[in-house]
Image (tube, rainbow, N blue to C red; front, side):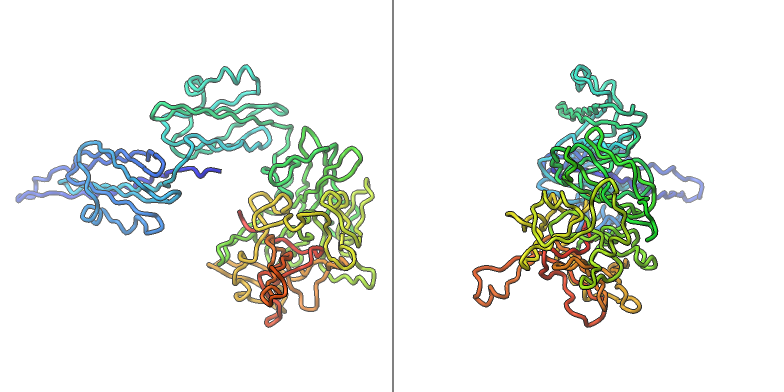
Amino acid sequence: MKRYLFATIISIITIFTGILTGCNGNDSEPVVPTGLSVSAPIFNRNNVSFEIETTNATKCSYTYFRKSDGSADGWTVDKLLMQGIGLMCNTKVTLQLKGLSNATDYILIVAATNSSSALERYVVEFTAGCDHDHLDVSDPVVTANKIKFDVMTRETEACSYVCFKRNAADSAAWTVDKILAQGTKVAVNTTVTVDVEGLDFNSDFTLMVASRQYNGNTNITAKNFTVYDKYTHLGAPALTYIVPSAGDFMFDPKLSSGAEIAGIATADWIWATKQTQDDTDQQIIKDVKYENGRICFTATGLKGNAAVAAFNADKTSLCVWLIWCTDQPGDMLFASGATFMDRAIGATSANPADGDKTVGAIVYQWGRPVPFFGGYADEWDSEGQTFEQARLWTVMNPAYNYKWTVAKSAVDMAGSWANPTTFYVGFKGSCMWFSGTNNLSMWGETKTDYDPSPAGWRLSNGKDWGKMHANLTPAAGNEGSTYTYNNKTAWIPPKSMGRDSETGEYIVGARPGTMYWNGKLYADSLLFNMGLRPAPTFYPSRCIIQHTPGMVPNVPEASADASAAYNVRCVKL
């Protein structure tokens, strides 16, 4: 997507008045104010121009610099008038700043004074760049029967929009001139968020936005959208949707890139977490259905997780989404520069005082975007306990024959979605759940279609964790750790060692640690460096965190078996 220019003009006006007093003390003269105005920036690729006009001024000067090089605070009016670049006074002049760096923030400061010592100053912040559109309109976000969208304009003198029920004849009738004359006006040369309310349910609409530039050129953009009965749209496509409150919701049954899933006939929930172990019915979501090309459901407002699947006519699951009912997660900047979510996918709290609610109860096999329930206690495969935690804490939809099982075989992606409660551990000790080709590209350094992160987030990578491990503070009894940076603290809960790659059993461990998947592969260069292999060997990568001081390994990336299942702690895109 192109980066668009914007400018925010902040007018800071400070007027100092002085009184000139005659020898008899009664001959004072009125202070004449200095007039100074600065226009909105006009962009032309890497050049920016401003119209600057002064009145009653005896001196006017300006300076500009990259925002990263300083702030306006250090440039007082007196300093600017002495050290700045002079401008002609008492007229309108065009100031041109040429050859600016692409996609770089700048500050322009202009100051003026007159014989009465009346001072005035303007500070303008703007972003320079090239190859930008003069009109950009975001896709409308539909909430119940209203929409919200952003309009960005540049070098524009007028902009308006109209919104009407979709009809080919009406669309053709709305010309640029008609929209500008009869439509709702929008502020220009900035980014504006527009709300339109009171739209009819179950109706198709067209939004049209038109603009006219200073040079007379015109632009027009049309966006089609649909308002469905009562449902709030959950936004951009993803395989996990965060639902922070009770209500009626819907989402597009697509992969993260927006790729369509063919053959959908119905939708339903597969399993959901319990509120207590004694629950026999799930209480997280209800009334799941496939309607008008969307998956719709009602959230009760209780916290927890539910897996929702799209089925074909034969009742085969085609894709699975996680409905994550939790308060809206926060985020925290790490020293590496990466911004992490404040909890793992599936956790319903980030407060250490909430205990097991902070544990990422949802785990994934590497590259497989199917959510599995993890647990809060050890399972022992030798004692027949594998998936006992899942059976204790989840409810299966009785309309289907799903159950938590382990299979010593491998499947392709379609097979993994068709059997979303089967934990594949490979065959002949391979510890690889997947079969077929390109199986190491299902996850990666950048977000893929199979990345389970919500929209706007991605899987972590080793470099995102940085040197966080060296700055952990173990909690009491080594039950978790905290990481502090820039006066903010992140909680790393215990009991999150994941599901075993050979048995599927859940592991807390004698000294509970935490495992998080990385998207980027881990390059094992040991044998390559020894001359025993022609190239490094690549493996799925995990971050290992031990909460007991001195325990090893404790590293941001290490190799792992793809059939193991660990938490995912997302990084902001």
